[in-house]
Image (tube, rainbow, N blue to C red):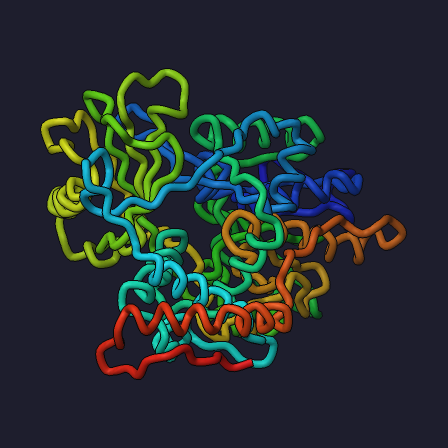
Length: 490
């Protein structure tokens, strides 16, 4: 390649990180801290991946709404190491709004009975031991005969609103893991003070470059060859050439989406642990709808809002109340069920979502909208762990001595996905490299995901059972179901 000829830097200790999302950036940061020469190659013009932003119609638009729960221990520690803790601010509340509730004289709320059943369902899920088996979230919920239709739908929406998965395709073990982590580390959720590109990704890039990491954008990996138990060559599309093939003299961290890993062929996927499992992993889009309004909507909270019962699983944040420079409402909406709109032209999909928002936001109408940015992300989906996917997710160390893997699709404790999954996977890949090149140095720090013991949850479930039975009796039987709490499998 033109930027890295054979030299003292091109030796067996050099590490090439391919993929400039959070996983690749975290890996490069940790590897640089080990004193290794590192170069970071990214196919697009900017780093950040799904944590970054794009300039669309003259505005900087995030990929979606980003939050940093307190259990994102590795991600939050990384922001501290970068001196970027001030880029995030804690939120004090999380709101759930039903149609007709906001600003109205009547405020419909879930009944106490439904709230108890919701709580009992979550505790019942925590009581499950998924170390040897898994099931879909849908299967778990539909076998809980104590759940009313309303409580079941609320749990499903609670999950879908924060992920890209429908309950039929989602792992119950993964949902359990994230709920357990939140309960064990329930501190304030943090949110960026502006778009994540300017407040996190661009400063992160500057820190990488200041430590000596060679960052190269516009470098896309298109092919590899292997031989003798090693990765032998990389073929890259660069600004200077459509196909630039180079010999691999050091180590490589591959930090690209699992679909791109599969595209590199069986020669590479067969070297993963488990072999070829990455081919069976799934991703789903998580849409974003950003609406710039001409006025400030009254009564709208400044914190995150979940629209309970939203057909397209919408959650939103009014960044107009949170980011500097805004005098009107700017709705950043996450669309959990964006695939339902894939068959519609963009204008019609937006109209459907605006009509849905109007049932929750009194007085809001199309005439209030100054600008629309709709990003269905159909071509850039999120990894969604399905039932039993833990046996398919590849480990950071591979059968090729100089190849290591990173990305939120890599093996991890249930519940460690999203940004935390990406960052922790980058750290695990860096630790894999350390064992190979710097075994005398201390291990790369990787904080575990906090969890809840199923035994403790079973005790709480037993204590709540009488209350759940009373709540179920007040709610009446679910159509086609018997009444009364049902103990989950243990």
